[in-house]
Length: 293
Image (tube, rainbow, N blue to C red; front, top):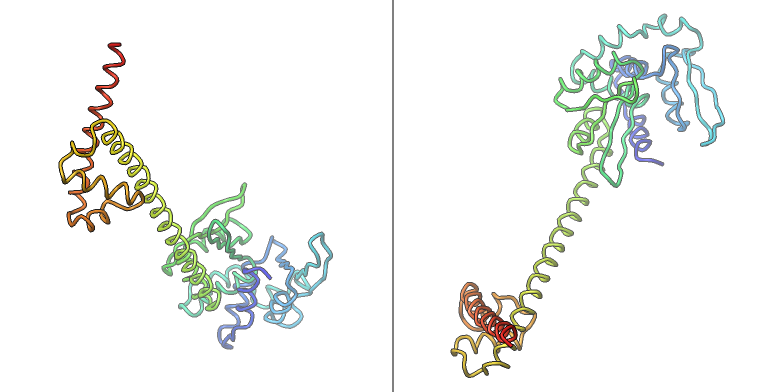
């Protein structure tokens, strides 16, 4: 079962106070497809729930075989039966302007019939895709007026609403009653953040190690060049000390070398700069001699 169907299953299992059942029904109706007002899903339990929440004998359900499996199709039993039961766009839009409880239930109904939420490798994605751009515009205003940011976009000439922000998605799921779904989003975000921080830390540590190895390799080359050319005894005592420490500890950081030598990291770095300068003078002299020869 996909995460979207898990959320819808949770919503279908929520208790609905009697005084809010009409608002839920209007939200579901407002999310129906096309002017013919139909709803289809691959989840029989969701289809059965939607049919049950409507007044008796308003909707009929058909089972249709598709390439993806069985689909359940709900449609009005009669063209006029929806209006006869007070199910109109005007009534739905009036319900969407109610208090927080009414709007939350209304959006719950809309999510069940025209909403989806996904957890993907790239992140999170929640969307509402009601039929008609005017509905998208109204739904955009409703959601944002209640402090939950959502974006308006389009596929071809059809508009839809979406959010990719985990906190916004979690807030919206909480508002419509999908507490477990909201918690799951936040748990997944926490796990992703922890993994991201670990990877960042590992990458940073790896980069530091690479820099230490490269610097150490250059320092060892300079030290050996000086020892082979001038001899160790030609160096001041402080440079001999740090040179021998580096040769004995090729993987050690400047800070750790400083702890052994009882000097600061900057002090160690300064000594290696002096060694590097001396090694560069030897290389320059060699190159000059070769050129003159």
